[in-house]
Length: 180
Image (cartoon, rainbow, N blue to C red; front, side):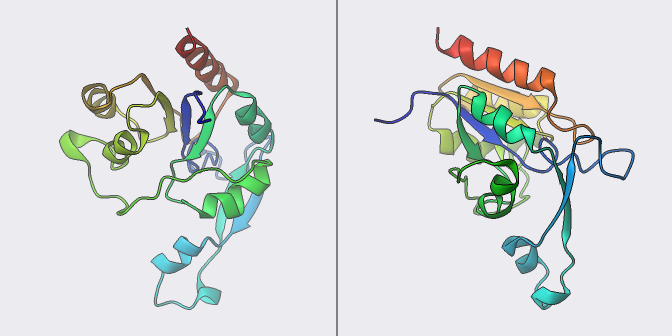
């Protein structure tokens, strides 16, 4: 039987990896990882893989437990695509998650929307969802409200701080309201 829980569409860089921290050093409570995702290597072609630099990623392992405790079906909505299951999920103790596969990356959306917005609406097909990303704006909220036939929460997370307790509280509260 298909899940009736709302979807939680997760971006990696920003919400889980606070890459824009002002300190430029590992934020407290985070662990530093170095990954070389396949898509990252492809984007640096024709440079040989061994010459492509490693990506530094900061992750907070407790986020995995906090995410799985939420009443959602978790989905990767990130440029990492399947590399999120290869690298990010194991670091956070998450199982393999469904992945939204982007046909094109970084192609601007309609009316000033984030490049992910129209693809997310199409992918969700009217199912309730919360989208966690550091690129969400009011343009995206208006677009989703006009084009998505179900409840949606577009939750912006600071790329300087990543997911915080108040974000988890907001996500939990919204999901519980969807249950009636």
